[in-house]
Image (tube, rainbow, N blue to C red):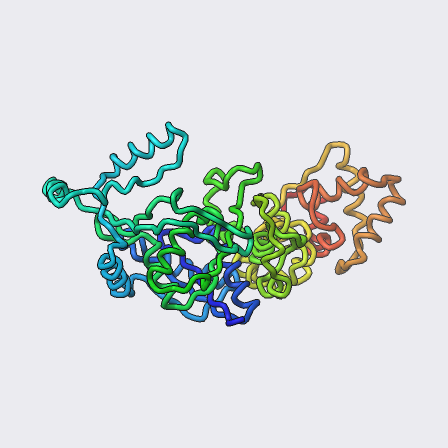
Length: 450
């Protein structure tokens, strides 16, 4: 087997979101698994919508995921290649001008829907006489250009869907060039795939029909039949099974990072969805060892933000202080010791939640004290061990309180927690008591806001 060459070709018109991040990971994993090449190729031929800030953001997000690339290409620098391909196709009458307006095409689409049929372009442009073309151009119309599909059956063995067969009779001639002369993605993509030696394309199943045109265009430009292999994966759906949509937020990687999601939780979920393996937090390097396209099924995987949060919680609970330290520093918790992180991480689903517990230790807390517990808490304050508190202090202290008052269970522990932290739930009090310190603990037990 020759070494595979794969590519990820985002349009830098916005931030990377979970759907195309998953596609990027699948292509990278396949390339690295088989010792191949991975190309980052920016589809930036739209000068209005493509922005360098998005190019930089996509690069940064890919690196955050753990994706590297062997080479980077910019389609905006390759216009001469596309112009040469256009001239060649026109000279062979494989690219033809069409003068219908968008309104006229929409009318044809509507008519097809009313007949409960898919819209297939009727190739009316091929029947226009020179006089008719001259008349249309005199009206100020500029043509868009379609690729003339050859008649017959197109078949390929999809790496995830199996044998796919399409009769071109049921596929519309694709538009390759808009009225303003700008390219649609297919022409540039095929030109680049040929020149860069791309061997495998892994993408969403919404591109299945496009593959018919892509294969025929690829061969029209000199590509060999079967030289390109495809894998069309089911698209992600929302937790209810409907198409993943804006109602769940943009789900951009930048937004998820800013919300405190860790890379291992996102990689674990996106590479695990739809696979037969158990979904666990993982880095791409860890996923690489077990990656196999045959593990992915045809059913629609459901992306549930709640599942992502659950995975993130697991990552945080297992996170070492060494890993957490830079994140704590960025949150302004540079003075927080390792003992603090080890105490609170089990109560956080993201690192930022540690701020709340640092505030409990270092800032003013209003004790929650029920009237029935005032005297009990004063007695508890008097019984606090002298000197520095340590990990054994809580057990010894509460044991002494229990013997002196007869209180036990929730009746014993809840008033102490509420007075010391101002909250009913939280980290283990044996660690929190040490971090709060004897003096502050005594004052809070006596009802003082410190």
